Length: 248
Image (cartoon, rainbow, N blue to C red):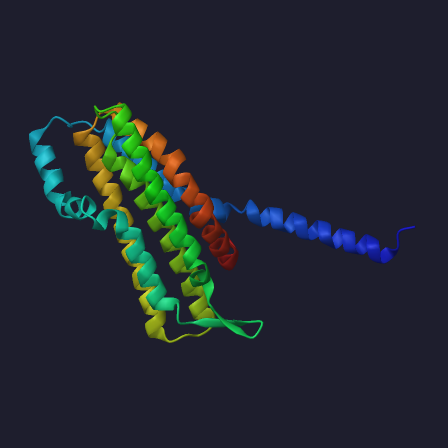
């Protein structure tokens, strides 16, 4: 016969499971995860559907505004932009430690920085491998390489911005020095600026340099091959932590 203690323990366990499921379905977590993804899709859609793509004047004006970033993006620094965010985050917050079983361990998201780096490297290698296969099978371009590359860069930086936000809240809670809190906030602002520049660049690319089908193919393959792994590995876990911390 089941005792009262067993009944209460099962009830508590069930309540904990329900609470966990509620946290997993948090509207705040979904917004933090998918609103930037929506901004990415919107930039591509607007670039594809915007009028005036054949206007030489509009092309010259748009190119003049975005050429400086496009030069950076198409160089070796373009794919490395998420790594600059990650390194800056590590410098700003990694020397803050929490005690776990008597050992000093990195605080906040810096404890997972190795897993983040592995995810970024895996996606980068996947991107290069998939693009090499596609260009070999279809020598004539059937998708935008710019948009395909930007898909992974944008989502990786999104994960870095969320990581910075989580670490900032931890630094505030632990009353760390204002300089350290300011540093991690600056890294987050740098990440947001990079995201905005990537959106601007892909808008110009979709509007003036590629047809709708090429942009759609790059967006489709970019989402399923590059962005989804980063969402599962980095973005969604950090969005969950941030939503829980802010009670969203």
